[in-house]
Picture 1 (cartoon, rainbow, N blue to C red):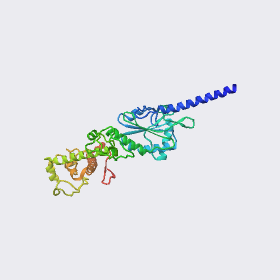
Picture 2 (cartoon, helix red, strand yellow; picture 1 turned 30 degrees about the vertical axis):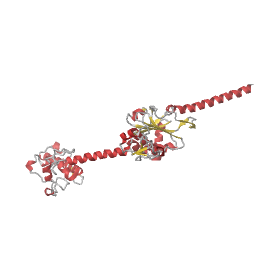
Picture 3 (cartoon, rainbow, N blue to C red; picture 1 turned 180 degrees about the vertical axis):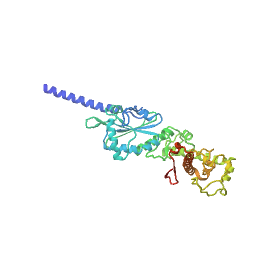
Picture 4 (cartoon, rainbow, N blue to C red; picture 1 turned 120 degrees about the vertical axis):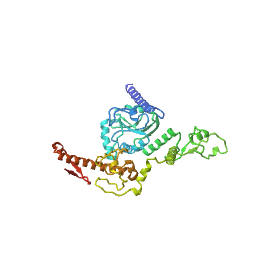
Length: 408
């Protein structure tokens, strides 16, 4: 009786463990958020900070992608994070911020980041969330009951959550631990989701950016014409619809709205530019300038002022300048009311018409450098003549045309 009772007890215990294991596995699966649910705010540590908030990181206007990883120092995850970093500019162009997630602490994350850089050549600068106690992994329900780490704890699967700007889940993808993610596919579905969100279109099988999209099924033909234009979509010729009068054809193709929108904006910009060109009339002040810039009024000139340009308008009379040659000021910000300097003595915007912005900037820099040097030399000479020992001992130098320093 005792042996029989023990056997029954062991059987009951084994049955209870089986029920608990089954319940825990199903419970983890039931807990997993799905499309349309609000993704929780991950708050805790990353490799960069101990006060991270996913909601603060994403802001109110960015899309988000959260990548789940089974653990640090795992081979497949190492290649995945390097691939994600290499595509960060692509995500940024799509107004999307990325965030990693792994069940380890910040110190192990930082050590792992160094390995990722050595293996893939990519230095991670996006956050890698820490969940050493698996608290958030349990909340998200991303465990694989069959996959255990060295301590016997379940590890996370390779889940991907794409989040709308309002933090709701737009798409989920789950890979087993033995299969690495396809980041080209992640970019493709992100493009498709943003087409649907921003333009209200669907995408067909194997769709790629630039391919035709599909008019949504809940939109009848009249609504489709209002949205896409009378000839804005093509209806597929289907046997089930031949010879029938219907308000809604269920398979209708339209162009990629990104290309349509870009062409429309480009056309509008071009039309606006053409209108400005046609309506432009030269101001009265431009007429004497045009005469001053004519070929007959330009000559080659080589002087000692350091001006490199070979083009110069006719110089006005000395008494009309209003300033001495060596007192002409140089303005780095191209003040249109100021002379360029001793090397030109004319309005900078007239010079722009002849030699361009880059040449003008080079002229100003050279003239400023030579003007500073000349003023220091003059000050030294005048101090020397006045026998002023204080100013005579000041630092005095100039630079020749090659850039070398000459001490006086």
